[in-house]
Length: 163
Image 1 (cartoon, rainbow, N blue to C red):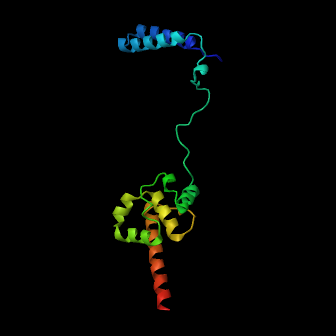
Image 2 (cartoon, helix red, strand yellow; image 1 turned 30 degrees about the vertical axis):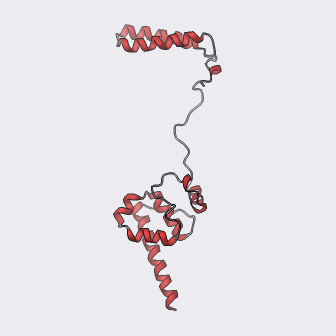
Image 3 (cartoon, rainbow, N blue to C red; image 1 turned 135 degrees about the vertical axis):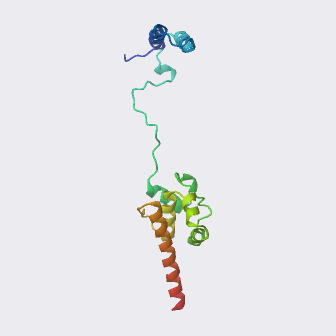
């Protein structure tokens, strides 16, 4: 069956219609098959592939390829916020370390955990540390790592100001 024509499809549908009639299935379904048969018979012996419909010989993937974490981080550092997939936060408002620290400190932990995905927290951590390495762990562990990093930055700043 290398050459599939509309006439071949119509003949298979006629056999299916006969089976439906024998089984006593609803007439509505049989009428729909009859309509399709009429449409396909009007095309005749034209190849299905010539009309622009591809046969299902090739495997199709319903999932789109997700961008890798390193691609997402690169997009974030370059300011291409539209390319970020799987994120909930608005990164146009979180462009500097100070803004990120302000967001984390002003919002409660439950609000941050609700508003941000795990990917968001990983990206915030990358922005805070200015490192493109992905941090591993649960959402809660990543949030705690962000808080630790903020505390360390404050202590370091206080030490530099004191000395």
